[in-house]
Amino acid sequence: MLSRIESFLLNLAAIAVIGLGLLITTSVLLRATLNSGIPTRSTWVRELMVAAIVLPLAATAAARANIVVEVLSERLSPLTQDWLVVLGSVVGLFALAPLIWAGWNEAVHTLESGSYFFGQLSLPKWPGRVIFLFGVAFCWLRLAIQVVGDIRTIRSGGRVLTGLPTHSPHEEV
Image (cartoon, rainbow, N blue to C red; front, side, top):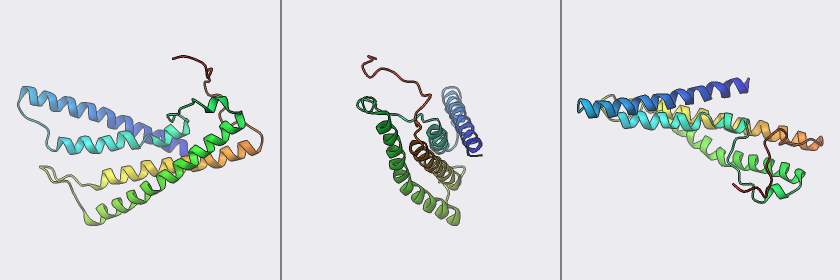
């Protein structure tokens, strides 16, 4: 079930990126040809950027596609490497917790107050706040599930990072 939600959020992020491309292209074309523009363009871009960046976080965590630096970790034992993966996920949980708290407070505030962006269209602020909250919350949930699963795997004698591409620690790029 969670993987279907992650896939849905990933698809929404892809739609946001396509929307960004169309919005910026249309704005440039209108500016160049008709000396006109799209009302509240910068607000649209800012809100779509939130969706494009935050919504795919859970799918990125599920695929273990985080940015990692393996300068020293590849030289450690496989068991130590697995525990480092768990440690990284736990640190991620602690790092995301204040973002979820702040995102919740901001989403509730904008929904209750009915705040909107000033401009020609008076766009509401709540969609971007709620999108941020959902993206970060689902990433936190994915990390929590991975921590539990990884600890179970390690305790049963298995490896956490099986099937991932490997390379020599002495390989030059």
